[in-house]
Image (cartoon, rainbow, N blue to C red; front, top):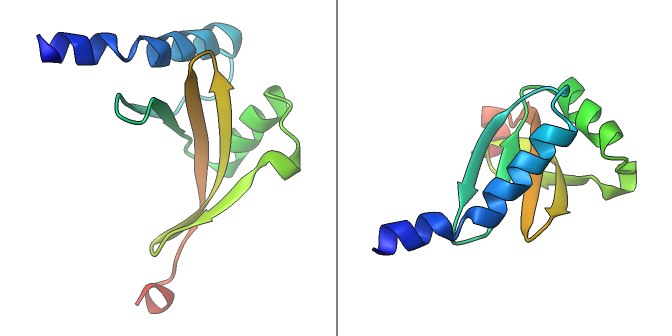
Length: 102
């Protein structure tokens, strides 16, 4: 029964994803993951061009884009509340060179 409740607990994320697909279905697709624990959808785009298409369609100003750095890569991210879920739209700017990551 816990598995069913866990899946049902993701209804807000599926609803948000459906909303984005219906409203922005002509935009580039990406890789989608969601977590019941965090209540967040992660939408990874293949390129900065795809990211920019989404940013423009969502009317997110440049100031609404965050730069994220990890030991292996740098990425641009937008956090977008959609209903009761949060969608993280992101794309990798560049991998971190091995000498910097070490």
